[in-house]
Image (cartoon, rainbow, N blue to C red; front, side):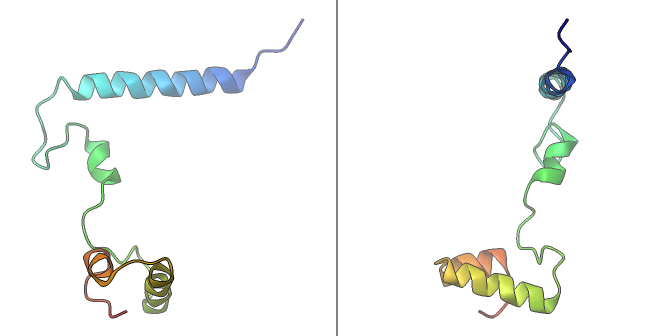
Length: 84
C-alpha cells in the first residue's frame, strides 16, 4: 500500500481557499482604497518606501539599483528624497 502525499493535499487546500476568498471578495463593495480584499491592500506598494532599512542599508540599496541601470526618475519615485 502506498503512502498518501499530504503535501499535495495541503497545496490543494491552499489553492481552494485562495479561490474561495477571491470569489467572495468580488461579491463585496470596493474598499476606500479601491481593492475588494483587505489582503490586497497589505500586499500592494504604497508608494515611496525605505523598506525599513537603516540609512546605510538604504544607501547601499540605491547604489545597487544604480548598478542595475535604474534611471534617476525611477530612483526618485521609489526612494523619495534619497540622494544617489
